[in-house]
Image (tube, rainbow, N blue to C red):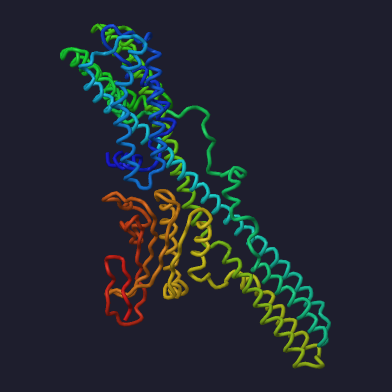
Amino acid sequence: MRKLRRAAVRAFGGGRFLTVWSIAASLPLSLTVMAPTGVGIDTLTALPAMVATWLCFAAALTGIAAWERRGRSRRERAAVVTAGIVVCAAMRPVTQDGWLHLAGLPAPPSGQLPYRIATNIVVWMIVLSIIAVLESSLRSLRRTNALLRSVAQELARAQDDAHALATDARNLLDRAQSTLDAAIIEMEPTPTGVRRLGHEWIREWSHRLAELAEKKEAGNPRRARDGFGDRADPRSSPSPRYVPFRLPPPGLVTLIYAVCLLPYATRTQTPLELLIGIAALAAGGALVDFLPRRRAIARVPYHASLLFMILSCVVGIALAALAAAQGVAPLLAAVSAIAYIGFAFAAGTCAGALHRLRSEQHRLSSAVADAQQLARAGTRPTRDGLRAAADLLHADAQGACILFALAHPTPDPDDIRRLRAELATVVSRLPEAFATADDPRAHTSLTALFETWAHVIELRVDVDDEARDVLSSIPWVVRDCYDIVAEGLLNAAKHASERRAEVSIRRVTTGAGPRLRVRVSSPGIAARGTRLRASSRMQELGAHLVRIPGGVALEAAFALPLRAAVVSTEHRDGEHPTPP
């Protein structure tokens, strides 16, 4: 119920409570459940008046929707929607009676008008709210999934670029090693030949390795979003061509049916007939809700959905037959069957659409999480390896050639042999230098992560100088910090009310020693009691969700080696203490 309440609050103030779907759904409801009833009223004869009433009602809802779009705050939009629907629903039976009089047709007794107004307000407010909540949930899931697809494609592109660079680097390194080995063997045994080897061969290959390390990533950073459909995601599955259907929550169809039809039943039927109808509705609803969920039926694909619709048709026809047996006109009695079957189909279709979108979101979230782990280091290790190999050639090999030419104006064969052995040793160390290059500085892989996410959301990053020093010197802190930031940005993309987030990484001084505090903040509403899963990686790292003004944050603090005396504590309100 908490989720439903939050969804209703979000829909009322979201600026799109009334849409084309709301107006379209009001037509069948106006011509069936909300049709005029009473002695002497023929539904078919009154159809033109009912259509005219709906046109007026739809025009009024359109005006409210336009007014709602202009609202500047959630509270203003919610007030406009609530007041507008109440006024329109209250005026609807009055308008309907006016059209009936203009057509020369009998209208319901005037004494029933207050009751009809109250019924219209209740029914329309509930029905339009249900439609708005469903559409808001579908829209939110589609928007989130589109964002996650963009992020997943950006990360996949980053992985492809890193893999391509690593392949190019190893190929170039192999060519450098084989070429230089041959050049060393063929070197002219004179000071001029040694200088030529150092300048034309060793220096050239050192520059080529360094240039590949500095090579910019090719392509447009927005390619992932603009051309997502051009590349197949290995995790994606083809969209079904049929209308998704899933069993709706138990009791939902019965509740909607009761809200829409029972107000009229209480006015037109005796207490005994009303009790019989309620009992029949409850029994039929229980049959429809629980029989298809039996394990023996639910385990077979599509059997549960098929049985649900068959039972819904049976219950709808049974309710219509009961109404006819109680003296209701056949055409009006048929409304019971149409309404129950229609509500069941609509509820199952909406539940199927929501389930499919949530499943896609879970799949995309998993894909993004996996991709972030795979793209964690990015191209930095390869670039660092290339630079290390280039520096080795430049400092050791080329330097050895220059020193040899200066120290041996007339070298003998033994000197040349020793130089060749020394240069061959340096060249043989190229693969080792490439593979064992120093790990990237801690904040480098984080920078790559920030750049990836900045393509798809508005991202603000705040890393102070002390935090950069920590990230450059303590590798295990970097890994954990990366995990927190990656999870926080993923959560921001999934749950934030706007496409923006803020990352803050600071070194703070506490009474228990220095800490590196990582916080990923995003706008939105965190429900009271919301927390991380007990078995999640974030829980293992000591992270927790905190509510902040205007949003929510994922926060963690990592203990650091003690470097100096500590005299202050970390404040709970999120302010950073002033170091002594």
